[in-house]
Each structure stands twice: as structure tokens, then as C-alpha cells.
Image 1: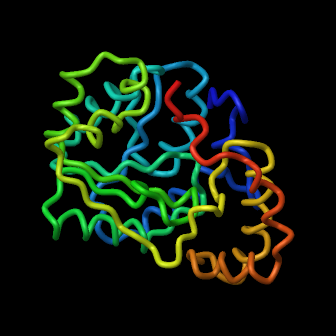
Image 2: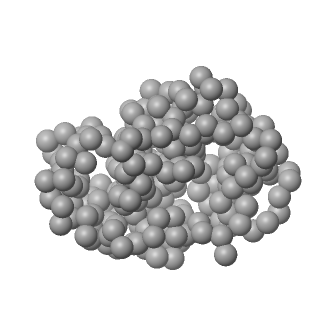
Length: 234
């Protein structure tokens, strides 16, 4: 809720429903996720978010606002998790089929860390990470760097001994921006929902690609922003 670029974005309404709840609906359609937990902060600014998700039947874990690595570690300990799938809460176009593909690659390849973002070949906003609990625990013990504590997985995938898997999409669609960091991003996503959702509330990546190909002007709303600008290491 304390996003600097778009405060309160996760509860902004799309078709009368908070953005985060649309994303939760989509994540719940993933077949390989056993337990879904909203991992947010104990800051008062996140009270409304926590309540909205609890009322929607989602488990909520609350921890340190700035030390997100500790927040994830404590939530994973509480859930007794062997593997953790990390999905950021500003991606209301998350695709459950993509989530399952990344999880399957991770498990079949016996990797320590797997994503579809190193390097990215899917639209920004469909990122999925999955990693072993032991890797999370190693990071939690090993690093006190502010960047690592804020971005959770950076220490893991930069560790030389870590076995890495990456789901690649052909063609490369990484130039497309479907995440919500800026007001223009929200307008793009709102347009997508208003155009597709009422006819198909389980629309996926291919449906969105078809929509934007038929309406190319809509991509001009937000394509000028840099991918993952908030996580670029200073």
C-alpha cells in the first residue's frame, strides 16, 4: 500500500473489485500451488489490504515493512514450505498456466531457483520465481545488504553454487509491460479487463496478446517505462 509511484495501487478498483483480488482469483487457478499466503507488512498502511484479503479467504502473514527477506522467511517457516513461489502483488494479469509451467520446470529440473525472468522473455507482469526453502534460509542468514533484504531473491540467484532454471518464451515478449507501477500501467490493465473480462473471466496471456494486437494504440499508454525500474541496484 505504501508504493511510492502509485500509493494504494493494490486496492485500486477494476470493474468494482480491488486489483489484488483479481490477481488472487487468477493465482488460485494455478494447479501446482498448494497454499496461497499474502505476505504483507505490519505497518498500519497495510491494515486495509490485510483485512480485504482475509475477508476474501486468503491467509495473511504480516512482517517487517522494509526487510522483505525476513518477511518471506518467517512466512515460509510458518507454512512449513519446501518450495516458495514468489509472485509480486502488482501483477493483476498473472497467468496461472505460466505459473504452473515455471513450477513444473523447477521440480522436474531439480533446480534451487527457477524463474521466467533471468533473462525475461515474457511480458513484464507475468514474472514467476520459485526457490527451495533452504536457499531462502541461506539468504536470510548470509546477507544484511539493504538491497538483498528488500528484494528477497537477489542473493539466491547471484550465488555461484545455485542451480538455476529459466522458462523461455519464443518469441521474446519482454518488451511488453503488463505490471502496475505507474498510473499509466493501471490504465492499461483496466482497459484490458474492461475489454475481455466480462466475456472471459479466466483470460490468459494469449487473449491479452490478441487484444493488444487488435488495439495497438493501447500499448502506448505505458511502454515508455523501464522494466523493473524499482529493483535496479543503485
